[in-house]
Length: 296
Ligand SMILES: [Zn+2]
Image 1: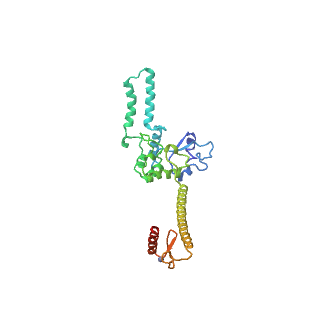
Image 2: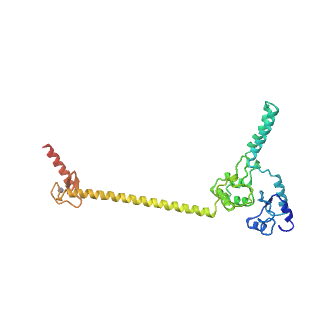
Image 3: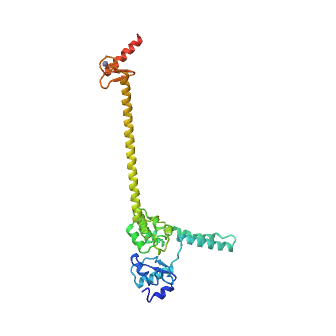
C-alpha cells in the first residue's frame, strides 16, 4: 500500500501522524515503501498521533484528522496562554490611553481569574484521562492510555502534568516503566523532559537496582561482621588484661599462702591492696587486724 496507490500522496506530506503498534511499525517502513528510512526522496517525518484511536476505521481517521486540525501545540498550560494573551491586550490598551481605567483592568484579569478558579477536574478540559488514571493510581490504565497515544507532557488547567498527580509508587513506576520501554521511540509527539517523567525503568535498570541492593546488603553484613569481630577482640583483650593482672598479683605472692591465716591459697585467691587471701573472711579479719595495729 505504501508503495502503491498512496505512495504519491504520502510523498507530498510534510508530516505524517500515525497510530500504530510497535510490532507493526516495521511494516510501514519496510524496504520499498516510500516511508522506508532510506527511501529517496527522504520520507516526511512520522509523528505519533497525539490522540487515541481505538479501531482503524474511516470514521476514526476522519475524527482524528479533525482533532489534529483543531490542536494548539503549546508548551505552556492553558491558563498561562490566556494570561499572556490578556497581558498583551492590556499593553495594547496602555498604548491607547495613558491611564487604563479600572474597568479595563478588570476585563483583562477577569478572564485569568475565571480560568484559575476552575478547579474541579470535570470542568477542566485540559484534565485528560491520563491525569485521572495517574491521580487514581491505576497503573494498568496509565500504561493502556500511554500505549493509546495519550500525551504525558500536557498540563491541566493548573499546569500539572499527569506524572505529578501520581500519588503511589505503583502509578509512578507505570510511567517510568513505559518510558523505559519507549525511551528511544523516534515518533513521540512530546519530549520526556516536558513530561516530567524521571529516568525510565527497564530490565537493565531493574537488574542494576537489584545488584545495587544486593551490594548494599553485602556491605551491611560485612559491617556487622566487622563490628562483631571488633567486639570479640575487645572482650578477649580485656580478658587477657585481667588474666595478666591476676598473674602479676600471683607473682607478687611467691609463697602462695594466705596473708591472714597462712593456708595455701586457692586457685582463685582474693586480693586486697598488696595482700592475698584464701577467703573473704580472711580479707575482713586481716583488715580489722591492720586497723587495730594502726591504733596500738
Ligand atoms: Zn586465710
